[in-house]
Image (cartoon, rainbow, N blue to C red; front, side):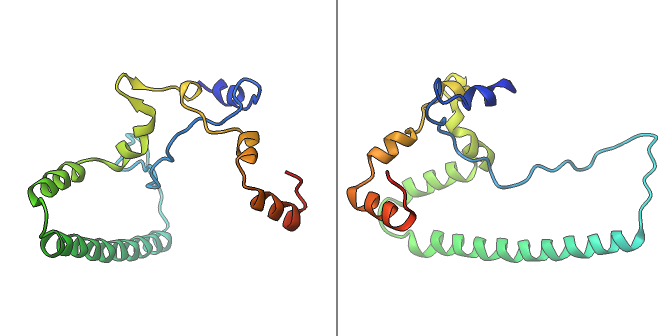
Length: 149
């Protein structure tokens, strides 16, 4: 609900921010959309520039992906040779199937489903964090920034 932002900014009722993981850094992208009865006009020079830029990005990502896969293969076949390799392989296979999106959202999804922001565990308040600072850090903050914590 949109009003949750206003509610969470009220430090009297919510002195600490809710704990949550950041979303995956992969942007959402709408693609392969079909619009019937709509005619787009393209500038050939702009399309050529876009194509070259995307092709270059694809080449760079392909190289990075190949390098990463090579390191994974190296670990798989050269480093993981001691200990319980069967347990490693089972763990690796299970982890490989999980999605970044699921990992990013896992802190908000419990056994019973989604946990609303206002009901999640909260971080410490500013006052609690200041109270937990060591004397040395307090002195440094006062000396360097002039903050009287």
